[in-house]
Amino acid sequence: MTADREAHLQLVEVSPFDLDELVAASRALYRDEGVVPPPALKLRVDLHERLQRGQARALLFRCGTDAPPLAFALLSRRGRRAHIEQFRVEPGLRRSGWGRRCVLALLDGPLADAEQVCVRVLEDNEPARAFWAALGFGAGRLALEVHPRP
View (tube, rainbow, N blue to C red):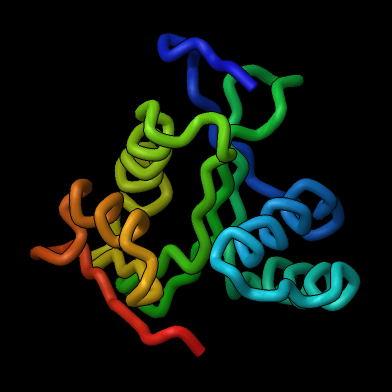
């Protein structure tokens, strides 16, 4: 997959009734982290309930209406504290600046009013830790929580 760096990045909110791409991306993230993903149906039901109740927001990042997603994010909030629960950039686009662009779009858009934005990473996921640290997570308003592998 290729994408023009100058193309307009679009954040598309995922409806609780249109979860195919979100379920596929979320399952891929589990596999990327070396974890067996939950069954697709269970994940679909859980995501549907959370989105329907307003407990989470899911966003797909695209460059063009009909383009496949570049990345996705699952966000939640507790008061003025926001969590980036899941974030994944398509493998062919990693290390090309798209992840940075997507996170900055979150921070300037849906997360702009949060007093604190927190992301959790597994302690043995060095690429993820380096990515988030390079974006300033771990200082000030941007919190980085490192967790042991379950």
